[in-house]
Length: 208
Image (cartoon, one colour):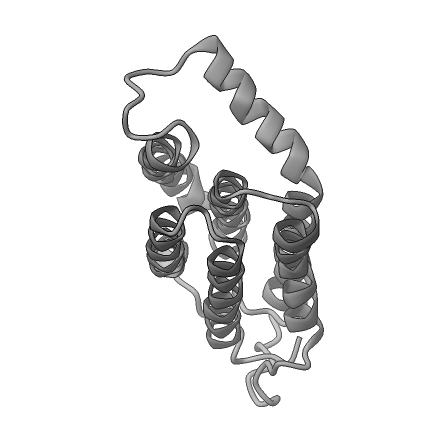
């Protein structure tokens, strides 16, 4: 197997995957500014993006070690799925239905579905962004060379946890100020910066 292209310059703000990432993050910003997207929609979008990150990380685990992923893959699905479930309940309770809601109802489930239908173009753009990075950087740049299954399995957690701490802090501030569009725009911008920095650090061995 050829070694990864580690001698090339690191990923930059002008790299294709960085440009695609920024373009994907323009959609929720446009949604907040021009289409009246509310805080609940942005929170649900970024929760769904975490699922996209988990999906591509599972593919990376399979690429790193197909045999070991037969055991670690299901473990990752259960563990990451539990993380996603707890995170969703938090978002649902505080940003969609509100803390006073006791339990989910058919009406609230319909509301979540309608939110997903409204944000699907932005979610698709984020899926394309992460998919491009997977194929161009991880496979094309052979970033899987030298990876261990343990390291790959844990990779998405630090990025997602830090990203969502920023989002939740900004979301709470937005709630206190009455769902201010300006604060919501700030959350999106800060999230994009955090996401971009994590992207550049993760792909520092390639220029894509």
